[in-house]
Length: 263
Length: 263
Image (cartoon, rainbow over all chains, first blue to last red; front, side, top):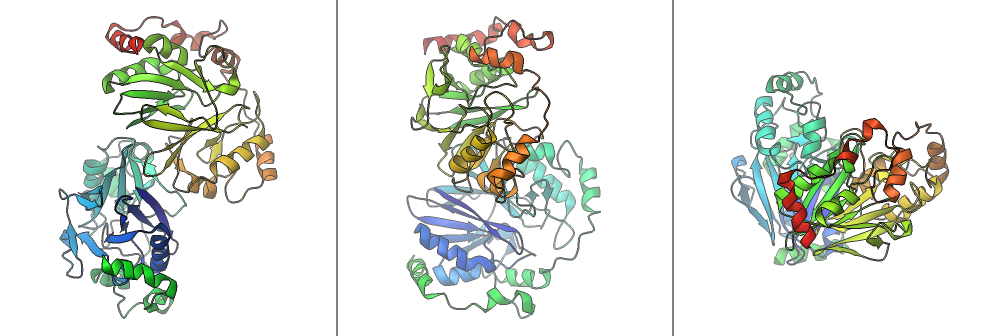
């Protein structure tokens, strides 16, 4: 299989590429609209067909690249079924394995950051690999103070879905703001200052309710845009419009699009 | 395959178990004499045959469990060939792949912490996995101020053998003193305060030569003991003698030994 951890700087988002080498099919988990061209170049360089884009949740800090990638490659848009997005092609849910070629992702319903958040578990043959979305971050977790956030639900998700996984499980989060790339379940159980070392539900709720975080910079256009699978809404401010205004691919990438369209 | 990251608290050492599920053969990288019984219990629980113990280098901070494990299970002792240890069964060297059942470890000659240090690279199918020994630690590296340490050699080893691996490469170190379990090559290239962010050879040598670290607590008996593959020398101080004095296995572990003896 082929794996890449990709980073989008403005929102500090990790996008994950996971590909089945035998079939050449791949998925991009949480692609960002700002880095669609980079993603297409990578698909081209690796000779892969983008079968799916797959969201962990309705992002408030960036627009998803799902719609543009579908437009250019013919990929299908997969989102949590609970989101009931008419723009999506596939609804994922816990209990329904999500295959990509010979690889299988297992969706885990993990509400708390948002009410429909899903993480994706994968077995690489050596250890489980958790794409934890915004539920569990390295020594942190997603905020719970906007959209459908709920600290009690997040605590229960992390304990019931993540902390009973083997300690060796790799944790690949959707964000890191300090240049860290991954953690493990064992490490988070020990070191996560909000959740580790036996922190109780009450401790966690108190921490989360006292974060005093700033209002999310992009939420007013990101959420409506992501409800349309990454369609740029009219209210995108000038400084963030760049990626919205790219409507045609550079000539050298048109081949990628063609391959996808036939797929 | 089966993988476990095991921790020995007194020396903060990580021992790694890697097993081929098809054949039931396994290797323990850097076992510690203090945790031999734990290791045997794990082998028993997983139904594995210990084929090899494998050292990254001649440790100064703990006695290896290699000799006791061989005695109890019939495992073979593998060490860097450059160590020329007559007590060992196999000498490993860069360029000579080291198979364990269907799995293959690739030894990387990485002097600097000691002059014969080797790391082991493994491909798990998703990403390369580096057992980095004491050469590269998480946001740190092995000290270079005793035994055959050499900061210039260590800098070259890390740059020429590790930093040209893919960014996604998992880095499993031989120690961590803060409860962290792993890193990646990309993360260390960015965040390692001694080696990352374009630190020069001169920067690194200056940092390493000004560490003012305490004299290693166990070095006076660990190094001579490890030159005999983990034979306890006479000068082990009272407070560290415990593991040396265990000469017979608990009855419920004698089966493990028997399986190994036949192997």
